[in-house]
Image (cartoon, one colour):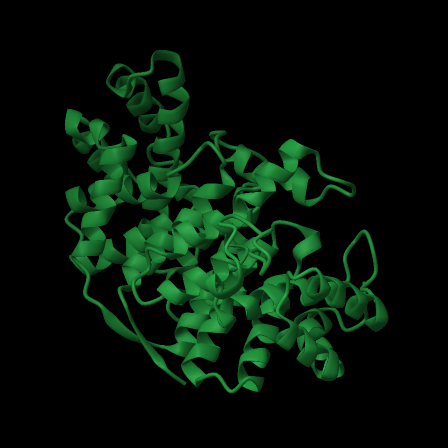
Length: 417
């Protein structure tokens, strides 16, 4: 296996942009929460390493939210079953070696301080989780308050009063007191504005060194985000994993270098990252999309590329993932690349995406049969859309390709739907 030189903070920051997409218009929440939490922690005098753990967990704290309907509830100060996304997020963190230390922070980031005091987790973990909860509720209260005046400085007293009211019940007194100290500075409120909070987070990235990450560690990190995407719709369950496995299998058949095959796997896992921006009802729609709806869906591959291109060291992964809807005749999107403008690796991801979707069970239809799958893919070749060499191999090695495409679905649902 290969190793990759990456700035881990940059990777987490860029992938957190995908979480912002779920809100569609309510964006940068994770970054604001990370900023607020870090400022509170600094005022508490926490060591840099502890603040760094807090920052990483805070920027990812809503990773258990994939659906726009659930995300809309985040704007409420409290709601029924608000802990569900915390549990899902913690499970995602536990699945990744690099993120597993943050699992408890995510699991308890909507737990009241008075309840946390009775929990078995370490005091330091309680404080980090509660600091994220406090920062999260501060940001939500700010968003609500800003709607009435448009200026945070005119609403800061109301925000502080609401937080103070929950001191010692919802939030640890030491954290609330530190927040009130920080909140006395106008600069704190000005930094919550989009361009300034972005700069704050950028400095966090700049202060971090590049490290060597083994492929299996990077794949586990990437899988966290592919699972967030696939959780968005029952239509796409295990789709990303299947595309990744097929893309890697195809790369190995064509004797591409091992590192290229690994990057093809990553591209497959991440190719639909931009779908987090697509409203749930469009992905769940059992029928033809309107022109406007299709236009909304079309941007997902552009959003995928826009997020991934900022991770230095994964530029090729970004390109291959972002071009999975390009077609050789130029009819694809979003760039209308054609022929030699589309790399062989991008063609592999495109073919893997089509093949896996046809082979997978969907709620509105059963998986297609071999003749139907091959008929559709051969038609795509005849129309000059998919690469004939790649489709030809899928046809000649159909059984193995098919098993690879549905392996994740079969493993998770051995008895079928």
